[in-house]
Image 1 (cartoon, helix red, strand yellow):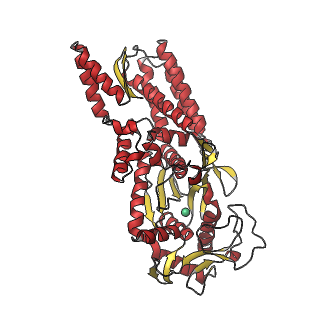
Image 2: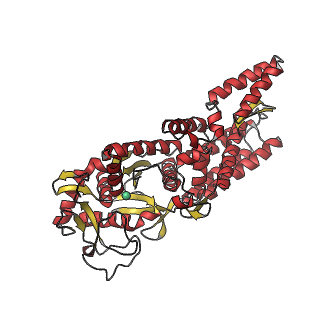
Image 3: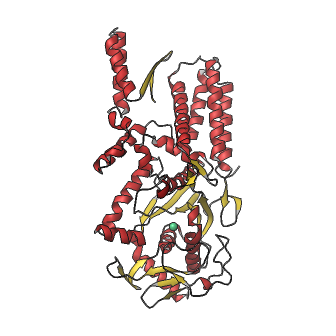
Length: 492
Ligand SMILES: [Zn+2]
């Protein structure tokens, strides 16, 4: 089987194959860095990461680029209000975004590029569009794209703009979703605003032109995949197509990958409803990064995901179940036997995992296959049917799962500690959940040391000492279990 993906442009599921050999050139719209990223943003970034990881796992090479939008109306306004330069204002949030993607085990693309580092190239691009008649200058020195000259306008969003008013303009980055207007390519500076001196005059680029210029610079005139959140289809991506194809006369991106937004507790996320959460908010409430990633990846990217705290708790249990299973495989002395039925189960699970992901990245189906394997293998182990020869195959299937889902490594504690330290530095200590603030036992090594000390005390029959350590661990949310295979610990 080959990978099949839904293409917004064709409106169909298509077999994917790159333009050139085994290299996939992919562009994904990145963050606008004026605030901390919220979980709606991160649903998109996790979905793109699942796509990226699956392509890599399938043997493709990746040339993946993402922009950092570090200039737009909001940024100019906010930085002016804060009395700092655009650069100073945006760097903090850019840094935070890069930390957040690490927290969620989102791999950093090969190219992460800032809009403000490409302003001259954007001006040159606009000058070329003007020469071809697709752009015009207004009296104040701004430039607009003439959509009436581009007949394909609307082909991505499937909107019919027949009868639209020629020459009607819009100069904000976000505009009326149902009306087409000539959109700003370049904005002349208003008094007191940040601007760049370029060949087409003073000003700053519009949001859409950024992505056209940077994607084509890094990936070529035509590339394989363009990804983003569903809210970007119109006008942002429609405008990117218009600008790019007007410039080159060639198709821009071949496959458009759009991720649906999420609901929080059944409602659209909004600050006024009190259901607006950044990634950092959730971590400070005591939710593990691995649970958050698991939940975001667990729904199919083209269906709406209802993000609830109940589901987040279930996600934590699911991750725990997988980690415990892996630990059991790694620490148990199973009967010395050649590979048998359990190894076959592992092989079938790998095939099912792959088939599910090749089917338009069907992550729920992939997860179902893996949990079925865990259920059957645990039952098999309980019944003495799991032999030593089965273990490597089961571990291989788990590794294959984790190459895409990336939740098995037990590194939540270190990541949480990083966010707690940030909150303390930022004067947000009151946001830190009590169980996080009370515990100094974040690092796994510290837990290991205490568990070892507890065991030593117990073997020396110093039960008072071993009980004291057990109580200390329990207070920090660490459960110690005595199993036939020895002492194990886990986080509650
Ligand atoms: Zn973009």
